Image (cartoon, rainbow, N blue to C red):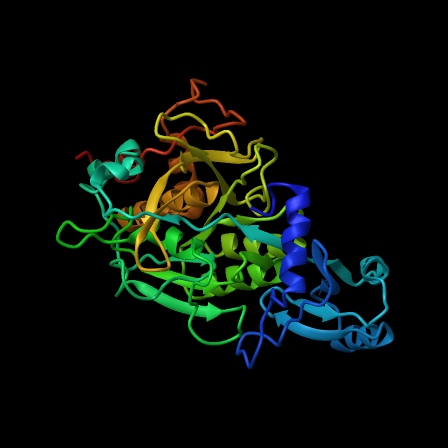
Length: 411
C-alpha cells in the first residue's frame, strides 16, 4: 500500500508518472473534464482542490481564478469543490497558500495521491471450503439463517474496477463510472477491486467457487484507481458522492493515503448526512490509521489471521473501529480464477458486507445504529472487556451476533 512506507509512496508515484500513468479522468467524461498527471510527487504538483464558501458570488470566484491564472479541470457540484490547474513554472505551495488566505475560501489543498492494497495472488488449485476460514470465523453460515442480503440494499465498491464476467458475480454488479478513463465500464486492470467484490458478494453455484458474505446485495462498482493501484483524492471524493447519489447504503473504500484531505472529508460528511455507512481499510504499515479510515464517520477496519491474532502490519490507533479476517483471504481474481490476499483492504469488505446484511434484515436502521451494532457485537479477541483497544478496536466482527442484535431473531 502507498501508505505503508514513505520511500515506497514516492517510488510508486514516480513510477506511475514517468510511465505515463494517469491518476484522473480522460476522454469525454459525463462526470468531469480530463485530469492530467505531469510531474513526480506524492501529490499532483500542478493541481489543487479548492472549495469556496457557499455564499460566495460566482463573479468573485471567477475574478480570483483569473487573477491567479488557474484553470478549472473538474468539479464536484454536490460539494462545490473544484479541481484547478496552475500555470507552468508556478509554485503549488504558493498558490494553495494564496487561496487558503482568501476569506471566501473554505479550503484549498493539493490533489493528494493514495493507493489500494494489492491484488490477490492466483492459486493453481480449485478453491476448497476449508480455504474460506474467514466465513466460519465470523459465523457467516449461522448469520445466513437470518439474512443473506437483499436486492434493495446496494453496496458500493470504490476501487480499481472489477472483472465484469465470471466468478458468479453476474447479475448483481452495477457498473458505475470509470473515473480514470472518463468513460466506459469500470474494468479491473489491477486486481484488487475484483477481490474486494468477491469477498462481499460472490454467490456459489452448485457447490463450485467461493461464497461472499452478502450474496443477495447488488454491488455498485466505481473505478477511481489506475492499473498501478494509485488514485487521487479528488477522484475518491467524486466517487463517494456518486455512490451515495446512486442510492448506495454502504460504501467500501479499500484504499488510503497518509495525508488527510478536506475534499474527501467533505464527501464523507455528504454521504453520512444521507444515511450511508462508510467502511475503509485501516492501512498496512503497523502504524497510524490511514485516511480516509481515520476520518470521522468512517469505520476503520484492521486485519486478523486464522488464529484471531492481529496481523502485524495492520495499522492501529484510536480511530480503529473493528477488525476482521484479512490474512490469506480466498477471493476472486481479475483473470477469472481465485487467489489469496493479505491486507486490511480485504478485511474492510467483510465489514461492508455485514453492514449490507444488517440493513437488509432491518432497513429502518440509521447508519449510526448500524455502526453501533457492528461495534457492540464483536468477539473480544483482545480481552479488553468491551473497551476500545488501539490494535483491535472494539473486537473482531461477529455476523451472527450483529444480525441477532439488528432483528431480535435467533437462528
